[in-house]
Amino acid sequence: MQPLQTEIHAPHPPQGAGAIRQVLVVDDSRAQRRLVSAALLRLGYQVAEAGSGAEALEFCRTHPVDLVVSDWMMPGMDGLSFCRAFRGLKRDSYGYFILLTSKSDKHEVALGLDAGADDFLAKPVNPDELRARVSAGERIVRMERELTEKNRLIGSALSEIRSLYDSLDRELIEARKLQQSLVRERHRDFGSAEVSLLLRPSGHVGGDLVGCFEIDAHRIGLYAIDVSGHGVTSAIMTARLAGLFSAATPDQNIALKAEGRGHTARPPAEVAAALNHLLLEEMKTDQYLTLLYAEVDLTTGQTALVQAGHPHPAVLRADGRVEFLGNGGLPVGLIPDARYQDVTVLLQPGDRLMLMSDGITECEDPSGVQLAEAGVAHILTANRDLRGPMLLEAMMWDLNSFAGGSDFQDDVSGVLLEFKSLGGDPGPAEA
Image (cartoon, rainbow, N blue to C red; front, side, top):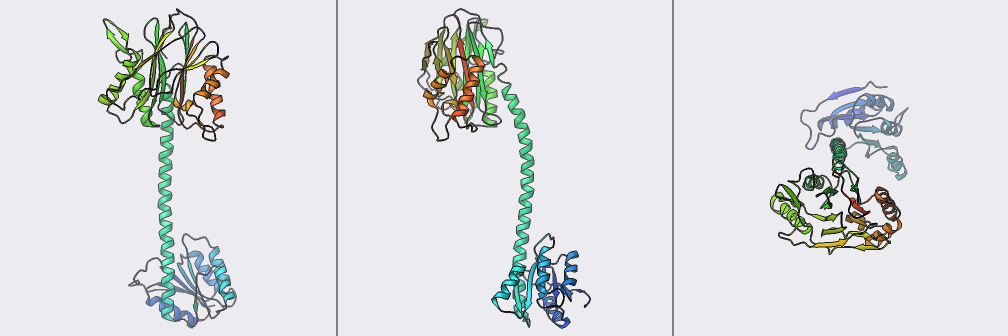
């Protein structure tokens, strides 16, 4: 066995070189090795030699060989066996393998390719052909390294994105808790009426908002809002809107206006117009919203409401009939000086008023058919024996069943007012 020799002669690498640095020439003939090595050295490569397949394999275990030029026919481990073993080594990059052979039979060539050879070079070696074969290997190795580097960069970018996503996910979970806290009470007993609230974002956070507040000793306000879009921007808008419908700060409540030393209620249509002006002239946001705002007199059951692009509210009468109210109306925040109209309805003891978002009415079954008002009426009628939060929970179960158990594509929200008797007094707290 000839001793392994390594010679470095690379003062001026050939044009386009750089991907291949270390070349290993393997041949049991010293003369043949010297011939091939000399040609490669003239091309500017770093060249090492091995006199057998076993010697070459041992060298490859400890050195990053980029290209191998190996004779096929050698005693002991021949070129074909060495090629298979070379492909089995754990490497950080691809190694190009050229077999030196006098074989030209197609079956022999197929054997070499199956063993992992990339190219073949006929013996005796022609220097020009050697240069061309090595140049081809240079291109392959360069492309492989460029691809590896790009994959590394992509992997690094994905890792960073994953880290950012995890951080954002944690923040959105906290944001969801904060948004849910905007609806502090999900059920409120006002004496002659009870109000239950439903708020289920389709994602971490959503653009729906529902609530109720006390106007005076005998009147309450109900609101259901759906801000355009989804996600963080819409959620921030709902947080701003929550302050505009709060009894805790009547001076900032858009549904109230100062009168003497106290406050009185704006008619619902005026509330929608004021909110429309606020969005367009003061907030100056590209977002818009749909709104249902109702003012309920607890002593008489007289209810006035405005529908601004929100789905039609439903009244489930004590006798089981379902009526839908409203005339549509324009969304809030789209058209300056938009006009809105009040709609009135008289609630009797046992009647229930349901304000709902389009996440309910436009919920789709697996075939794409929407629930629509007919489906809402069916769900309300089917669950008429339930009350308050239990009715809303049953509606969610039925809605999920209608959607085939899939995740809701939109936020789901609603306000349920159950009118029990005439002349009751509202409680002291806000929901």
